[in-house]
Image (tube, rainbow, N blue to C red; front, side, top):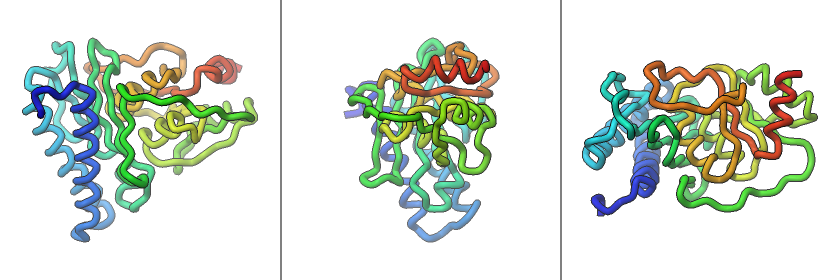
Length: 247
């Protein structure tokens, strides 16, 4: 089976299985609090890294939970993974956490899967199987951090008459736009490539606008993996968001 798996099938399968592993670690009752987050992160990372090394040995790899090396920088194809996006939410048994598995090709988030194991049925959204975006009438809904909403997002919401929806992980917020629960996800508090690569791949496939908040493209597999800001939104709201940011 593994030899004929497409990149998209592999990404979705790995995200799904890692999500199941994380649920089992949590349900084991062996850990709680920060120890649960650490155990989940490390266990899911071990699975994902070993699986990708086995299935795509020639490709580069970047994971939040593994020591980074320069080896990936010379590769055209680089897998970028976040075993648990939203460790706090995972540890609190909330639903707004995710597993990210993405493939960047020549710096572009080209293939991705975002698993939402905490949602009913363990949803996996993927870049190769997309549906229609849900229409929404009225002011936009903006997903923001539960604990530290970005000042820019708050300002944009005020200028557009929008509603703020506090939510956990970056993947959960981005997929809320994909799933029609929000129109805009604007982040400016600092992230890393693994926080957005898989969500950007899926969101782009669904026809959403994905960029930095100055409108420049998202570029992955950089030596410095820090990515300060991000905008994922329905295309009809992009210009209004940029206007609000520049007001």
